[in-house]
Structures are given as C-alpha cells and as structure tokens.
Length: 115
Image 1 (cartoon, helix red, strand yellow):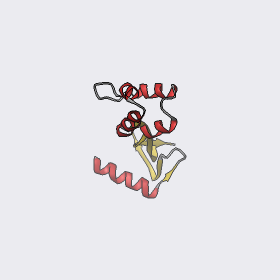
Image 2 (tube, helix red, strand yellow; image 1 turned 180 degrees about the vertical axis):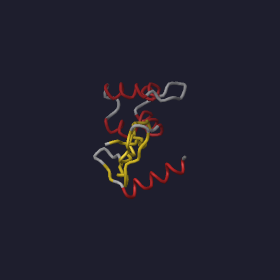
Image 3 (spheres, one colour; image 1 turned 120 degrees about the horizontal axis):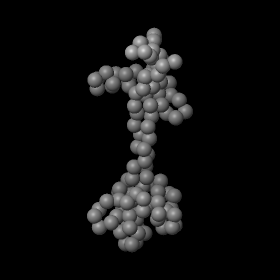
Image 4 (cartoon, helix red, strand yellow; image 1 turned 180 degrees about the horizontal axis):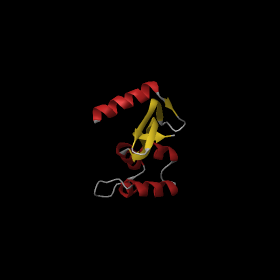
C-alpha cells in the first residue's frame, strides 16, 4: 500500500496542480466508480501543525534568565508551550522568539474527490 501511495504522490507532485493553500490535485483521466461515488480527481491535502523547537526554546529562555527558563522548562525537562504564550503576553519573550520556537510542521493526506 505504501508503494501505491508513493507512486500516487509522485504523480500528483509532478503532473498535478497546487491550490492557494498548498494542497495538490491531479485530475483523473476518467471517473473511477467506488461504491456510490465517482472519483474525478485526487487531492493530496496539505496539513500544517505548529511544533516547538526545543533547542531554540532552551537557548532563548536561558538567555532571559533562570526564572524564565524554569517557567518554560520545569524541573522535569518538558517544554510548557502554554507558558511560552504567557511569557509572550507578559513581554518576557518577543514575537521573533516565538517564531523561532514554534515552527510549522507540514504533512499531506490523500482524499478522493467527487464532482
């Protein structure tokens, strides 16, 4: 199944088109009936999520002092992403800091589309 997915992904990337949100499409040469639907194109849907860059968060909060670092990194070394936003609201971190810490992660998913 992964081989099929990879071949379809390659076809969509090389011969398809991209919409304004970054999702990719390829029109099928003929409708493909599946159950009570006819699929006319395949969509490789772009999905983006925000993840924290732990190295950037540690570097930035350490530079702001021990108290700031300990709030973002409690003694059990896990990043408290919610606390980063509190620190931003309090002015302890800047938008530029947050842009370095909270980075986008992109993924794609296929969806069959009917007319």
